[in-house]
Image (cartoon, rainbow, N blue to C red; front, side, top):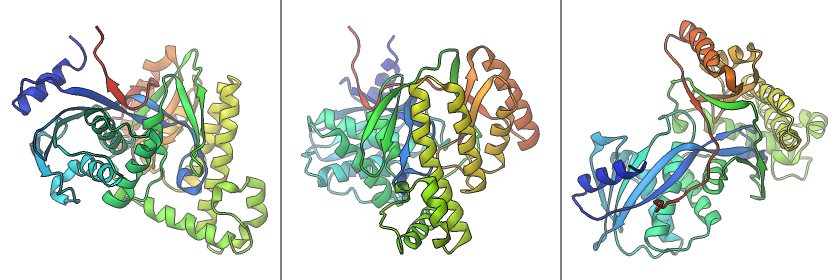
Length: 393
């Protein structure tokens, strides 16, 4: 039986049809290094992973659009009309595909009929592996396929970001949608978030694997201090612009920052800017080290990144710090850091393949003793970006 056969059966049962839906998939993402740099005009270094969101759909003959999620069966089928796609708090998770549908329409896409769409995601909920952007891009590739829209992928990525910013109300950058939309198996992406210039870099892990460790502390971006951090960086940039002709913090090198940091009047804002600028430099250094196959140096850059996120950006917290600190103490771990926005969510670590079980046991024992509950562990294989899943003959 194919991996999607069960989902097709669920679709036919929920929507009372014998038709076979088309199946699409959008991954989640991890960011290997370059955190909170994306909205500061810097570089990030993400990769799409094997966990993600499946979207199965068929066209309807009317203008109804019906959404169902196997992850939220309690909400049942959420129904609306193609002419009634405004944000509605009661529609809960379905606001993400609704927003994507609305903005694709507004961009000129001819979506003249409704659709029945089933979602299933295997990204740990609230883990910070970008389940919301995964839903957006899964919706995008599904609508693109069902209605033969031939939409430019970068445009679809921009619309996903627009959903977050202007429909949901989260002031996030473009990294998540870009990594999910443009991912490539066994590669990471160096992305300039200011220009959207990008290049692929092969991930040569050899005897190591990338482990994702979920703190199991739920975090919601809209309710976190994410927007506050962004405002602090904007204030720092504004202060620097009194003397410097720059349009983002990402344009400064660490050396230039040290010369001009006195221009930033607020001490907290200065720390936030320091993180953004030094982290951007680490990201460029990381690309070079991975291209050279120097995983050990890359691991050290990951460690530096976490310290900066802990001390200068202050977005880690006890749970993430406990996992990362414990990982640093294991001699078979090359590097570890939080990934995502912080305030809970996940950490990542580069771990010797032969020591994965020991890693899980050691980390979890200390974590449970200190935090009071278990962490969860996943091996992240680097997969392709959002696409249709075609059954093999």
